[in-house]
Length: 124
Image 1: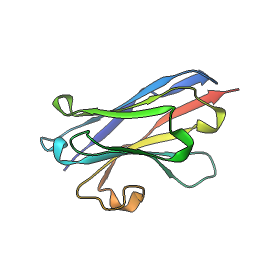
Image 2: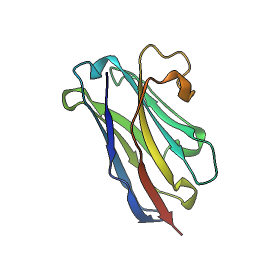
Image 3: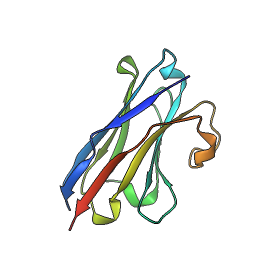
Image 4: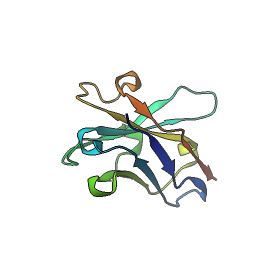
Protein backbone atom coordinates (compact mmCIF):
# COMPACT_ATOMS: atom_id res chain seq x y z
CA UNK A 1 0.00 0.00 0.00
CA UNK A 2 1.31 3.44 -0.94
CA UNK A 3 -0.08 6.82 0.03
CA UNK A 4 0.88 9.86 -2.01
CA UNK A 5 0.74 13.50 -0.89
CA UNK A 6 1.41 16.32 -3.34
CA UNK A 7 2.51 19.84 -2.45
CA UNK A 8 4.01 22.92 -4.06
CA UNK A 9 1.11 24.19 -6.09
CA UNK A 10 0.03 27.80 -6.12
CA UNK A 11 -0.58 30.92 -8.15
CA UNK A 12 2.17 32.10 -10.49
CA UNK A 13 2.40 34.53 -13.38
CA UNK A 14 3.00 33.31 -16.90
CA UNK A 15 6.68 32.65 -17.44
CA UNK A 16 7.22 31.75 -13.81
CA UNK A 17 8.23 28.51 -12.16
CA UNK A 18 6.93 26.09 -9.57
CA UNK A 19 8.26 22.83 -8.18
CA UNK A 20 5.77 20.20 -7.17
CA UNK A 21 6.64 17.47 -4.72
CA UNK A 22 4.98 14.14 -4.09
CA UNK A 23 5.91 12.26 -0.93
CA UNK A 24 5.10 8.57 -0.73
CA UNK A 25 4.54 6.52 2.37
CA UNK A 26 5.59 2.89 2.52
CA UNK A 27 8.90 1.08 2.23
CA UNK A 28 8.73 0.00 -1.38
CA UNK A 29 8.77 3.40 -3.04
CA UNK A 30 11.79 2.55 -5.18
CA UNK A 31 9.82 -0.29 -6.79
CA UNK A 32 7.30 2.08 -8.28
CA UNK A 33 7.43 4.01 -11.47
CA UNK A 34 5.92 7.43 -10.95
CA UNK A 35 3.82 9.69 -13.09
CA UNK A 36 2.38 13.17 -13.00
CA UNK A 37 -1.03 13.90 -14.48
CA UNK A 38 -3.15 17.03 -14.57
CA UNK A 39 -6.78 17.93 -14.93
CA UNK A 40 -7.93 21.33 -16.10
CA UNK A 41 -11.46 22.58 -15.41
CA UNK A 42 -13.96 20.85 -17.69
CA UNK A 43 -11.34 18.56 -19.18
CA UNK A 44 -10.25 14.97 -18.74
CA UNK A 45 -7.19 14.17 -16.70
CA UNK A 46 -4.13 13.97 -18.93
CA UNK A 47 -0.65 12.55 -18.71
CA UNK A 48 2.21 14.97 -18.07
CA UNK A 49 5.40 13.08 -17.22
CA UNK A 50 6.77 9.71 -16.12
CA UNK A 51 9.94 8.47 -14.46
CA UNK A 52 11.17 4.91 -14.04
CA UNK A 53 11.91 3.38 -10.64
CA UNK A 54 15.61 4.11 -10.95
CA UNK A 55 15.18 7.58 -12.40
CA UNK A 56 17.22 6.60 -15.43
CA UNK A 57 14.44 7.20 -17.94
CA UNK A 58 11.82 9.91 -18.26
CA UNK A 59 9.01 10.64 -20.67
CA UNK A 60 6.92 13.76 -21.24
CA UNK A 61 3.86 14.82 -23.10
CA UNK A 62 4.76 17.06 -26.02
CA UNK A 63 3.24 20.22 -24.56
CA UNK A 64 5.64 20.28 -21.59
CA UNK A 65 8.85 19.03 -23.20
CA UNK A 66 11.71 21.43 -22.56
CA UNK A 67 9.78 23.21 -19.80
CA UNK A 68 9.03 20.53 -17.19
CA UNK A 69 11.45 18.12 -15.54
CA UNK A 70 10.48 15.07 -13.52
CA UNK A 71 12.94 13.65 -11.00
CA UNK A 72 12.93 11.47 -7.91
CA UNK A 73 14.86 10.91 -4.71
CA UNK A 74 14.26 7.34 -3.54
CA UNK A 75 16.01 8.01 -0.25
CA UNK A 76 13.36 10.62 0.50
CA UNK A 77 10.45 8.72 -1.06
CA UNK A 78 9.79 11.80 -3.16
CA UNK A 79 9.15 12.59 -6.80
CA UNK A 80 9.36 16.13 -8.14
CA UNK A 81 8.01 18.06 -11.07
CA UNK A 82 9.97 21.20 -11.86
CA UNK A 83 7.83 23.45 -14.02
CA UNK A 84 9.44 26.38 -15.83
CA UNK A 85 8.12 28.88 -18.38
CA UNK A 86 4.62 28.26 -17.17
CA UNK A 87 1.70 29.16 -19.41
CA UNK A 88 -1.95 29.84 -18.57
CA UNK A 89 -2.84 26.57 -20.28
CA UNK A 90 -0.81 24.73 -17.62
CA UNK A 91 -3.48 25.69 -15.08
CA UNK A 92 -4.85 22.47 -13.59
CA UNK A 93 -4.92 20.23 -10.59
CA UNK A 94 -1.75 18.15 -10.70
CA UNK A 95 -1.72 14.57 -9.45
CA UNK A 96 1.11 12.15 -8.84
CA UNK A 97 0.58 8.45 -9.37
CA UNK A 98 2.50 5.25 -8.69
CA UNK A 99 2.53 1.98 -10.55
CA UNK A 100 4.55 -1.19 -11.01
CA UNK A 101 5.60 -2.79 -14.25
CA UNK A 102 3.80 -0.32 -16.46
CA UNK A 103 3.76 -1.00 -20.18
CA UNK A 104 1.87 2.11 -21.22
CA UNK A 105 2.85 4.94 -18.90
CA UNK A 106 0.45 7.52 -20.33
CA UNK A 107 -2.71 5.61 -19.36
CA UNK A 108 -4.01 6.57 -15.94
CA UNK A 109 -5.80 3.28 -15.38
CA UNK A 110 -2.42 1.53 -15.35
CA UNK A 111 -1.40 3.30 -12.16
CA UNK A 112 -2.25 1.76 -8.79
CA UNK A 113 -2.07 4.70 -6.40
CA UNK A 114 -2.96 8.38 -6.64
CA UNK A 115 -2.52 11.48 -4.58
CA UNK A 116 -5.27 13.99 -3.92
CA UNK A 117 -3.77 16.65 -6.17
CA UNK A 118 -2.38 20.16 -5.86
CA UNK A 119 -3.75 23.21 -7.67
CA UNK A 120 -1.54 25.12 -10.09
CA UNK A 121 -2.88 28.40 -11.44
CA UNK A 122 -0.97 30.41 -14.03
CA UNK A 123 -2.16 33.95 -14.63
CA UNK A 124 -1.62 35.78 -17.90
